[in-house]
Image 1: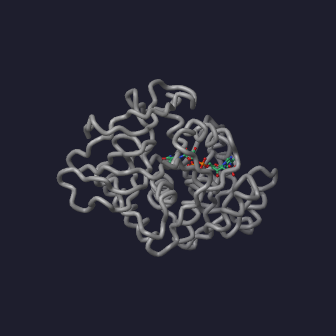
Image 2 (image 1 turned 90 degrees about the vertical axis):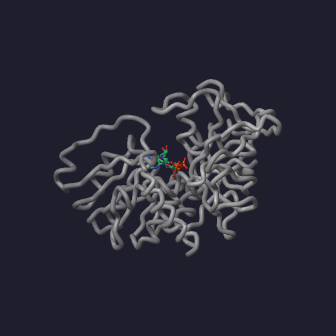
Image 3 (image 1 turned 120 degrees about the vertical axis):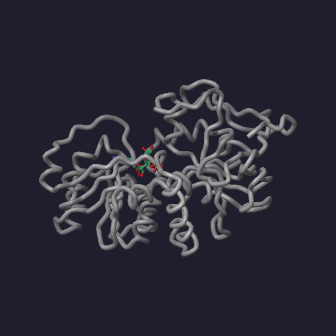
Length: 330
Ligand code: NAP
């Protein structure tokens, strides 16, 4: 990827790690040129993921060199393709699972294998809600928990980006789907997106009600969005041979490891970063089938203009009550 040097665009630039205010809107950023096997996309929307806030804060294990533009999940229209690109052409509607130049911008360059065709049935805001959320949900459920049809899954934190994806995918895989959310609006969204039952994780006795819903047997798989709060209770809610997938965790937690012996249960970490090219291809094919069949339909929540990216970063961490995916609109 090279900068063209002549065309300029608006983009968010981060020149130092820190609070959301380090996300600066610049209007004189060179539009990048697509290099070998790269695609230049006119960005219409970009998903905001919690990991982008950890990276911006400088607290994440992997740090980009400064300055940089955040954002991996864009959707838009192919503007131009670099040498060696055969599967895509200018004018194609696409979404990405990674970008080279950053997605909080009017244009972004991505390598060909990170660019996927966006079906007409999905709009650009939905296209920006696929990448990290659905690929993570697939990794947790299929690659890590080895969830099988007929099993019961608890999507613990089902009202956000990954949660909605996990509910839709679980339902398509033939699981019994229990979800949680923290508000009535979030619960309704979860029930409309694949969950058979939904519980409020802010109510005191909700874990007891989850156990009652399984006739005391427990759940086979938990997709956990806030492990530092829930892991100990999760181990109580698992059935024999159950698996907790740690998708989200924002601090340490104390558990009694005897809880895993009693049920021969497993705690499995999930990191989308480690997905191999083969796993990504498999996941992409499964999700594309979901778009064709119609079960993969991202639920978009709050939308922000590019100049309010800092507000989006604040809200995704500080404002509870998720109701779908946060996206930036260009
Ligand atoms: P999001 O859209 O902000 O959603 C956060 C979810 O967590 C909401 O459903 C929220 O529900 C729920 N939540 C809040 N308090 C909870 C509690 N006490 N118990 C259970 N759930 C609770 O974020 P996201 O994009 O879905 O990501 C979720 C987490 O996974 C984040 O921590 C993110 O960093 C992580 N993640 C990890 C990977 C990986 O590779 N491991 C990939 C993607 C995401 P309410 O707002 O309704 O309370």
